[in-house]
Length: 401
Image 1 (tube, rainbow, N blue to C red):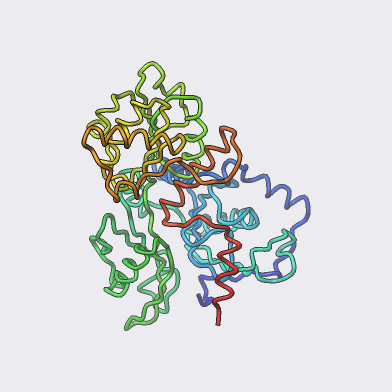
Image 2 (image 1 turned 135 degrees about the vertical axis):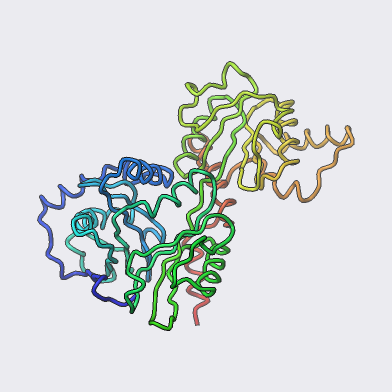
């Protein structure tokens, strides 16, 4: 992005804050608020809209080089406090100060932070080695359709002007499209087929990004933010090993339902981190649960009969991932039983079945096991083949001309 009146570029020349000032700022965002899941950030945005509070939404709209978080990362700032993270903690305090200025003048703007220098930026020890563009805007009712779509389980495409050469498209001007159609119900004058095509491609890639568009009145840059609701995870079972999986999955933005087959144990008091706790029969899994292509399932009942029935029900649904706790021999016994009953497992069903569930991370404590399960869930959800990032980076560099 080019720098203009609405876009301020910051680098090493900013006045270095004192140690006391840095300590004060570092305490502005408690760790639990900085690391808040996206669902918590969106809930905070909804609450601020409901209360009509004067808040500022900060969104990463561009990254050149390396950065802790990519385009679409958000932080909501109210007063001297923020919810959510933009970086690993090196810019959040600065953004709180800048948000105060935006809140005071009511004008959206894009701030550029150049973190590529060898020296510490503002004495904060920043080492991201990238350039980060952040849109700061007063939160207003224009963001309400985004929150409503998120709460209703629908995807949204948020189009926001972040730079333009003509006044008809001021920074912060926005349009929202909800659902599969990338075209807003009332598209602004600067919207066109080229922007809709770019949005379709970004959605296919699962990314948010900025696109530069030529217009008769001048160049315009629009940030296309794909905001998707959390995926659903159903964990079957009520044993002690369920809670760590629920807790970790909730922290990484799964909407978690615990489904128990023993009513006395299937209570919200027993699983407080779950969004919902249900008691049902394994034979009625498809009847009582909404199992679509954005729902993931982990079967951890430790009961052979319940496992066999629940897995059969899940494989007959649209869920893309069915994880089964237990050794490989467990499913072999289930498959043998099905064979005797005349039920054969198809290759497409085996493609969706992960047993033993989880990645091979080592360790065997309850939380180590839970981490391996949730890590596999994330990899499947985002279409990744689990590997060391170091290996991927080295491969990319070797392939560079």
